[in-house]
Image (cartoon, rainbow, N blue to C red; front, side, top):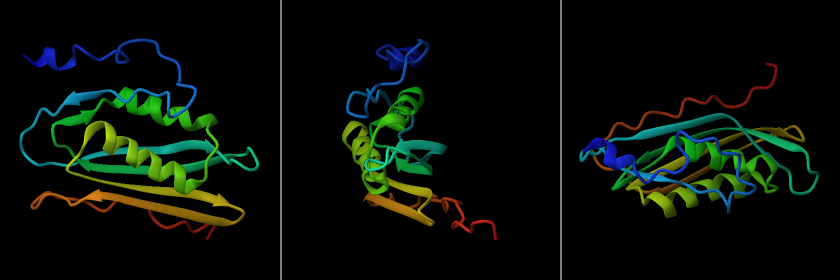
Length: 153
């Protein structure tokens, strides 16, 4: 029965505040509803974290692509997980790779990639990319579609 797949979710349909840190955030998962190989894309165009040195906010456009195995991440839990970075101090590289590694740990996908397209800090945009595994043969993997930073040009 379809509803049984969702019976253990604690965050969906409830009023939940943002977790105080990524380590405290619960990434809930749901049984993959499809036995075929396919790709899921999660996009967070307004991701924020904090610079660990200056305490100033940092902003990124994140694109997570993954081919699930047995589990998919529940989207509200993912949103709250990303929101937990809002007051988390870490460099761009640690935030981007940490998100990917946590997803790999929680849902064990067949393949995952993340593109962290960070807005300039000190005049230098930083893009961070991480990949886990190999995409299954025959799965359509589109370009992430985020153009390189051009400034006001």
